[in-house]
Image (cartoon, rainbow, N blue to C red; front, side):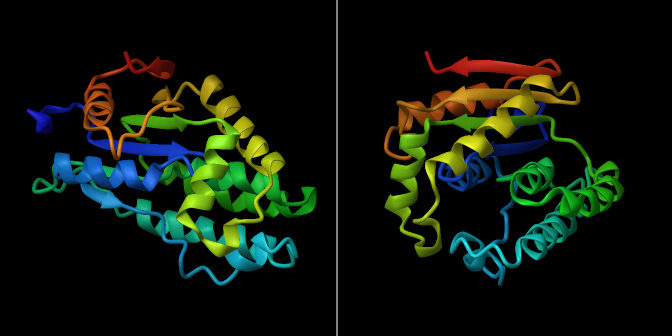
Length: 214
């Protein structure tokens, strides 16, 4: 049965354009899990950041930090009526993007706040990183057509991807899967989606695992 997963808090991660929200939504509907989606549409600093003016980058990163913290701190395993939770982001994302986007002086302030917040949040039972190469990410970014994202450079995506992968390869806090979705369309191909779902329902040891669909 789909509900018999040992993973009660699943996080779907990936670079910009990897398909995080789409997969998280599909899985939450299947598993009857509570869906936690990143709230970025109302962030007043986001469009300014992607316009390359970068005048409010610290405000952008701090606003994301606060929003993500407020969402994730509400997760409680004690809710007997809730089968589980699935999110389309991990709190560490805030620090990875901040490391990429902030100056060395700004990141010191950011890290002070991050270190206060992070310990109080529960860790995922499983994190799934959807890997796609940069050209595929750019294709998806163009396809979904958010105006403010169209100027994102390959170098920016490569830097973000590198920070994610470096962190996941080294961390020993929770099970993480790096799933190669390069040749996979889990929206149009039901078999691909079902295969991903089966992988996500399994229990994994702490650390990083590299998987491809058979």
